[in-house]
Amino acid sequence: MQTNKIGHIIGSVARTLLALTFLFSGFVKAVDPLGTVYKIEDYLKAFGGFFTDLLPLAELAAIGLIMAECVLGVCMLLNIRTQWTSWLSLAFYLFMTPLTLWIALTNPVSDCGCFGDALVLTNWQTFWKNIVLLSLVIILLVCRKAIPGTFGWKTELAVALLAAAASFGLMEYTWRHLPLMDFRPYKVGNNIPALMEIPEGAEPDVYETTLIYEKDGRRQSFTLDNYPKGDPSWTFVDQRSVLVKKGYEAPIHDFEILTMDYEDITYDILESEEPVTLVIMYDLKKADRKQAAKAFRLFEESTSLPFRAEIGSFYFLTGSGEDDIYAFGEELGWDEETIQATFCTCDPVTLKTIVRANPGIVVLQSGTIIAKHNLRQL
Image (cartoon, rainbow, N blue to C red; front, top):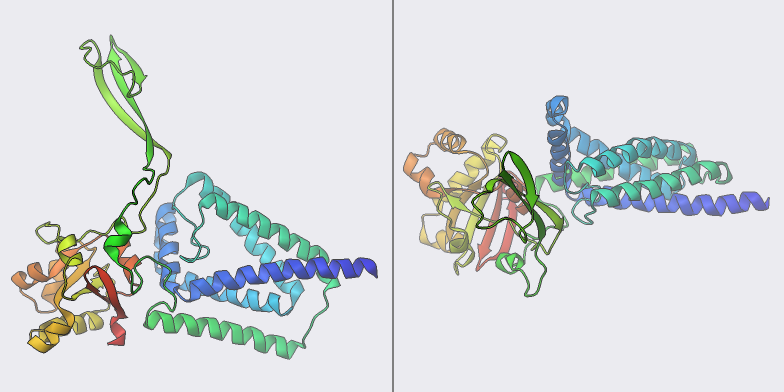
């Protein structure tokens, strides 16, 4: 009897910790499902080969993963079918743990994305996190028979279906609008120039530089302190730099806007005292044509002074190439001069980070983000 009681306590603690982890992971992904899609796409591209053919399935995979985490979390928390959920959790972590070990060793992407942008972990932190959670699953499996069920099967089925519907509904709403919680540095109210600054005294990246010289057919490596400077008998061959210590990195470090003529207008936009409206389409091939046409009409109608005063300057930002830009503009009836005057380019990863919509609208004033919209909202 005492053994069953101890097993019940230990199993319940393990079950609760696993449930909270699943719920947190599922929720922060559900409020930003596009972020999960982008992360899965990053992995598939990094794996290469056959996996790149699976890119069209990234959206479906993200939906399935988020719903699975939310349903498992709710069922574990409410002690619904603990034996089933513990075996499902074991299968999940027996797959994820070796995968995250391989990712930690090869580092195909910089962070796992397991908790979205709410809590960014390194690949090694993710692996050790999965080791801990796998241990909890094993404990739960050992103690599962000491944890009796709480509800009848009809109630359990209703709760599971409700959890699945709620998670899907949250994703659908967010998809059509914008994330309910913005964990990225480009949220409304943030000042971009301030987040680009490096504080005084912050440590920079530390690199170890190796210089390779050749003499009499023999190559030798030198450091910056002992290389044969001024010795003509040595011939420079190559230089290699390796990051040995990561320094301070500003929250925003890759924000740069170029015109079609490759003119950098980043600070012209950030220092503008009047509003600047940016219509963001990180990939023109994937942009919703109907919504893009709406953005073009918005631009054309803004020539009247009252409306222009509200939106200020107007730019279209994309990460697509020049050919795609001209083809896209011509498809919507714009001439070459208008396309060159309106379209600008920016890194597509940055654009996907700024706004989770394609197209999306961001309004800046003096470098501060004063509004963000999914174009479907307008």
